[in-house]
Structure formats: C-alpha cells, structure tokens
Length: 204
Ligand SMILES: Cc1cc2nc3c(=O)[nH]c(=O)nc-3n(C[C@H](O)[C@H](O)[C@H](O)COP(=O)(O)O)c2cc1C
Image (cartoon, rainbow, N blue to C red; front, side):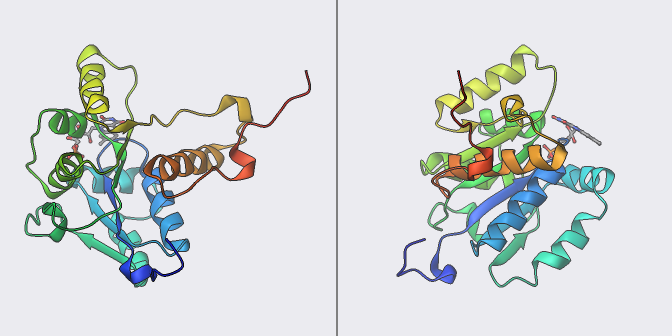
C-alpha cells in the first residue's frame, strides 16, 4: 500500500481455504492481513469447514464472527457464483489458497470451476495475477505432481508448508507463521520475511 492509498481503496487479497489439513495456516494468514490493515476476502469450501472444526478450537463460523468485526474483511459463500471476484473486472491483489487440497489443485489444473473458490482462482490465473498455492498432502503421487507442475507453468507459486529446519523451528506456531509470511512475500505483499524468519550468516 502506498501513502496515497487508504486501506479501503487497496485491492483485497482473496484467501481460499480448502479441505486439506492445515486450517491453522489460513487462520494465521487472515489474522495477519487484517492486523496489517490489508483488505481480505475469504472463501472456504465445504470440506474446509469440516477440517477447520476438526483441527482448530473453533468452527469456521466462529472465526468469521470474529473477522466480520473488521471493516476490511469480507467473505463469500462457496456457491455464490454472482460474487464480484467471479469476474476478472474486479481488481484484487491476487489469491492465496491455503491449505490447498489435491482435489482443488486437480480442478484448477484442468480449468474446472464448479465453485466460487475455484472460479476466483481461475480468474486470478487468466488475469495473470499472483496465485499462491499451499498444497498439503503426503506422499504425493504422479497426478498430484503433474497438476502442480501444470499450475506452476501457468505462473502459480507452489509453496508447500515445509518446515524451515535450518531455522530450528521451535513449534507448530513458528512453522505456521513461517509459511504464512512466505506466502505473503510470494504474493508481493511483503518485501521480506521478518528478521527472525530469515537465514542469517553463520560463523564458518
Ligand atoms: C480431517 C481431514 C483432513 C484432510 N486432509 C487432506 C489433506 O491434507 N490433503 C488433501 O488433499 N485432502 C485432504 N482431505 C480430503 C479433502 O477434504 C477432500 O478431498 C475434499 O473433497 C476436498 O474438497 P475441496 O477441494 O472442495 O476443499 C482431508 C479431509 C479430512 C476430513
């Protein structure tokens, strides 16, 4: 955001949440963006809502109830194909899908857009805006890898939630913060990782 822009006129980041493990990464991303006064549009798949409840200490609706208090937060229902972000004419600052399920990765790699999350991601690709995927599955078979290769060739950043072992991460919170900050750098919203998440010179 430049000095002339108000947060209200800054294009929003779309955060797509799918039903892979790692709901905590989506929560950290949205919390961080709102703390930094960056507009956010959230879209969660039906499976994402189930996984959210399974993995976190709250339901997705409870998280929404917290976020809607923030003036820069908006959310759309997964079936709302009339939402503004279904059209390329709506300006956005790109999209992060975190976590990204293999199902949604496969759909996107093949241009299938049966819900708003996938339509918004497809629009992001066709408009040549930044798309960052945080895929979560292990191990990966050839179709998973081929789908991710297709998306990488289309310009998406594939950012698996890998631990930065070289930083000697202390806990899951540290890892989640690392992945969220990496995604924001990949989207071009942050210039650098915070100092404590950067690899520093070592004594040789
Ligand atoms: C608790 C739980 C964890 C899951 N974890 C993963 C995962 O890590 N990666 C994945 O690709 N699918 C995972 N799935 C399966 C997806 O939720 C399922 O394929 C779903 O159809 C994805 O739909 P979506 O892409 O619309 O969100 C998980 C499902 C459950 C219930």
